[in-house]
Length: 439
Ligand code: SAH
Ligand code: SF4
Ligand code: F3S
Image 1 (cartoon, rainbow, N blue to C red):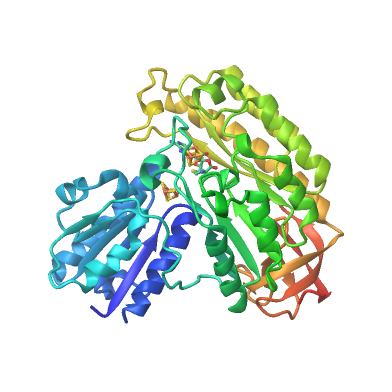
Image 2: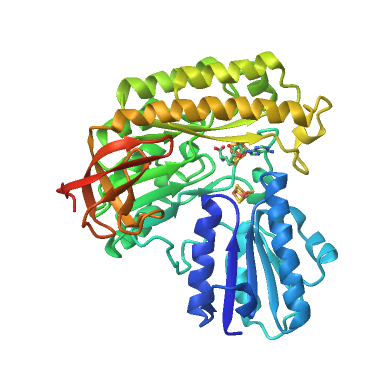
């Protein structure tokens, strides 16, 4: 086997896992190619968060089946959350798949590829971290760093606890060692990853105990790391120490992703989110008090079973009150094995659709208004490369996580001072004034 092609679906965890997979395949001497039909090894890193994610993947898997029938020597591998939720059924339903593995089993892919016989294999245990594997980063100056795997929450709609297992925190020394390695390799921004980052550390043995706020402070001290982000915190565990850290730690960015899911306390209860609307708004007030300019983003689900018009209005109210800088909005999708999928009062699709449209209108209007506060200000932009729409310009991100397109001469990986002259709901535009002192 000489070449591979990997398609990644899903969230940042999967993006990060794919970087590990690629690093591992490179170290086996298997080379990445840009087109599936050129690959001896066709791989997928899958997601099952909503039905649409399954469907997108299954469409792609159809192509792999065709390519394999043209050349039976090809190997087809399926990793990630969909795979974990299907387990051995993968091979029953898709007999052309050679290897299937869950998110915790990336190293097993190498074991499979280097074994003598290539009879179909499935690997579905939960086994800690892939932090020891080599990594091929997608963005040179940005590194994902896993601080925990799994999730101990029981959100009624969510498939993740069954695909990623129980929560396990990574030892703080291991997290720091990885951040130091990344910094030495030129990384300037890290994003700490976990399903519920602020429950980090609770399961660690006494001699390694550290809270998430302490971990942030330690990462902040690593020389060369100029920006720290994390995702996702859970509102139930968002404490003042972490919020204060945003004001106190120089590298910790002015952006918090605080998933709301619903603005109705009744629906939040049915979702088993374990906070209510007041508690959520309290957290927001605390953020605004300590970090007035903080960007806030969120996730919202519409059409959860039993959601009434009043419940939905309550969500709109919270959106108007908090004024998010951006929001990911989802139509509830029943997932196999979750309790909400069995609830009797499913909301009819046209109602979900209509609520979604109203929500998106509100979210976009507010995001566009919020963006205007950057116009006229000069912001630090970490340069990523040429602008996607105009290659003569540059693209990067401000600390508040908005993309900025600008004219200037800074190089990727440098910080440019950019004067913002226009803003839409999603992007800023401006001109470079000077290199930032950080550059
Ligand atoms: N652990 C993260 C979320 C991971 S899933 C957290 O708690 O923040 C990302 C988002 O997908 C969730 O926040 C939720 O808004 C959405 N989501 C999860 N399951 C869903 C479902 N069954 N239908 C619709 N949206 C869903
Ligand atoms: Fe899913 Fe809830 Fe865990 Fe997030 S906190 S991964 S939404 S169960
Ligand atoms: Fe992520 Fe999808 Fe799994 S959102 S955790 S890849 S189900």
